[in-house]
Image (cartoon, rainbow, N blue to C red; front, side, top):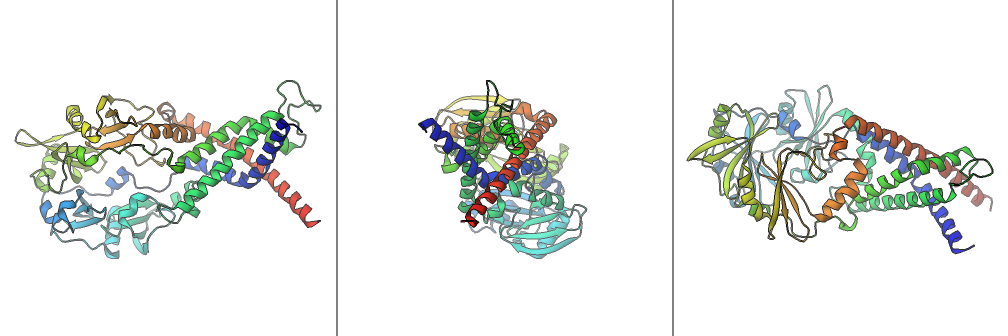
Length: 504
């Protein structure tokens, strides 16, 4: 047997045994992928969060921000100040310098103790008086792996008696609702994202054992799919036929269908398994290669030390006079200029800014203001900027059920391009004055090797959701059938091997 013959034999054996190992998991990946098109992993989206908050009242509220800061361990280090409602009552929420959270009653200035009673009150206010049953504390469970919940752990769990049988998770630091998970969403996720991401092996937000389990299994899947594709091509008679009259050498039905389905869907299988591997960012291949944008420099000050000299009640009244019923106020700074970012119950925003010796309400920042602050983001020069009025391949909005469904990608948006080693692109939200996203060249490559190959998420595809979903479902069904034939063949191979061992 020559070199080519040995290579083909080795490829065949690699495909056989990696296929035996991976066939069931690949079938489950395809099935769970179909579910994930319609039901995402539990998350609290901005519209859901804001819908659960009442509008702030200008009367009877609130103590000055300085009174809330006095409840901080280190007022000068506070990174964020938000006036919101907890349990139907206005509270300031402070983001401490170490990342922890503190809630301060905005009426009397006392620090909130977010115990079980407060959790129940917050849960009832969030779902407007639905019956609530306190279930205890958890550090983490199958629905709360998100790193964004880190500042709020441990979490209170409250089961609600609403029609959706919603389970709410609430911060032990502030008493705020941080995640909602209706029963149907939880049940579907057992055959959706929880299964797809192998979360049964994940024990904590940052879990290297789980990460490497997924990386290794995905790598084996890539090898199996690639070996199968080569084996299938080598055995297919592109010119002429075998004695049976078929272009496939296999007479047995399951083998023949596995061959045909492999040639039909093998490239898709390889692309999806490979992009799934890329989603894990193995060895940090898509990590930004240079410094990240300096948000502190971009802001030019912190709300703890640089604030509009306006009381919260005045800001609420000013917004109301413009027809905007604010449910939340956030004190922020942009380029050394303090302002208040307001949100209403529909997650819309307004800005309260200093203007001509007074205060004004604006829908968004003028572009020159952001362009003046943008060069502070990186030490290297900003070489160009552009305003996007439509989505493109790097800035786009995903459906709510997507893992990116909580990201609010609004238009227009300002893109600043820098001459740093990574050729970093920064997207600046004109409505909030915040950095919406940052992508260097490595991360842009990752966008194609993971997001595009795995989700088919170009804006033109997302704009035709029914066609995209129908195509993905049909292709996933092809993948399921291919994997199912592999399961049958794998079971046969294992029985045959077991019989040989038993008869020795």
